[in-house]
Length: 89
Image 1 (tube, rainbow, N blue to C red):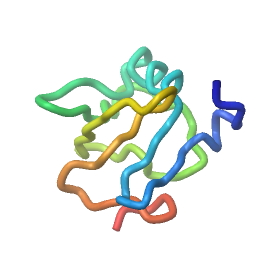
Image 2: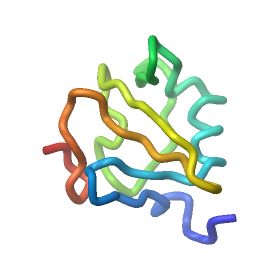
Image 3: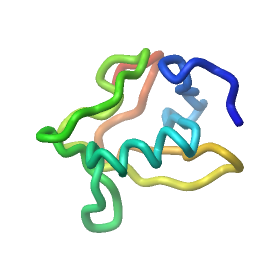
Image 4: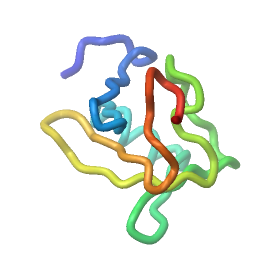
């Protein structure tokens, strides 16, 4: 299990995607903060989003594609730019 703080658990990858622990992903789905839509996932602004250290990690109307890597879930923004130090560029 990832020993990092749950608020500092985001890893930005070289390709502009990011990863979070699988338990954090399951929490996002459980509270309904993200929901499946088409071939990806999208933020539901009517549901609470657990806090993350990086701002604007899951903006409204942005689709995410995901893949699992061990105990982490890698998320890639679909058609909305890439992350660079927590900001979309």
